[in-house]
Length: 255
Image 1 (tube, rainbow, N blue to C red):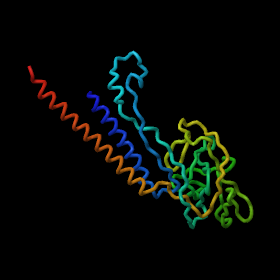
Image 2 (image 1 turned 45 degrees about the vertical axis):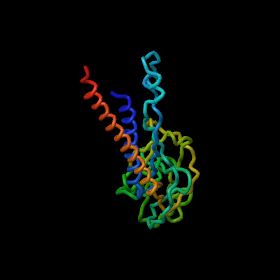
Image 3 (image 1 turned 45 degrees about the horizontal axis):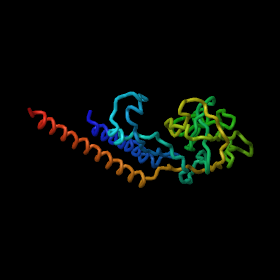
């Protein structure tokens, strides 16, 4: 395959991947607690270097031209979204650093989506997925709605009639680079292994939800930029294809 086509194709693929990621960010501008993904590209080494084949025959001039680009590993932007007031006593947000613990008590997932509710068994769960919300002891939380209003303090303590029922499980990780989206507003380890949790420093706010951290205008501008890059690279592929075709039809007939 022509070297120029390879370079242009790598740029087109990277730009299309960026478009897909940015479009997903834009689609979630109204999703509670959503954290957008940051995209980027990285220089691709020559095949001889990339595949660790130092003895492979190569061309030093072409290597100096580079081998195009690859999509860089995506990074989650954990910047806090705006806190919005709600009317539900089971809506909570974290003002500051940290996550709610949800899911499997042996390997909890993390979330910033504080839209909680009670299921048919009076267990506190995530509204959108039904995932159990865990206590500070990583146990399920049960609340009897007939026992009066529920109050949730800044430390996550849940109380009714002056008595403490449980405390919301809060946690964080020392290196958020190990986190990956799991769907449904949850994050877990990239390897699937249990997370080593640290203390959350944020404060719990009842009757509040954290808005999406995705920015509509920024996402639209980045999508347009990625689209232009993709179109430019596709244009270069078409140009090189026509040059190759002309070369074959013209010089291939000589002699």
